[in-house]
Length: 120
Image (cartoon, rainbow, N blue to C red):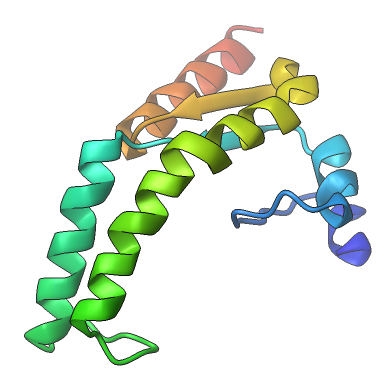
């Protein structure tokens, strides 16, 4: 990680909150937190399961009803426990953090940055 974050440009992704990511948060120019609505995540769980069962999408695990139901449990845990922790943990970086719900939000923000840099 240290070798990556000292380079000029880099992108990392993940749902990590452990101390070992601290240097990446400190060195980041921009932190994007993707926060789709709870209901959207539930719909995506259903779609992914259906696509995996229909063999339209591959999985690194065998899709089962047990795993499918666990995904909803994880999503509920994320919404009520993990997400508030993440928002609190990253609050020190609020000056360089944006919270987006979807890809369009990211595109709009990057377009805004580009226009501002071109305007001088």
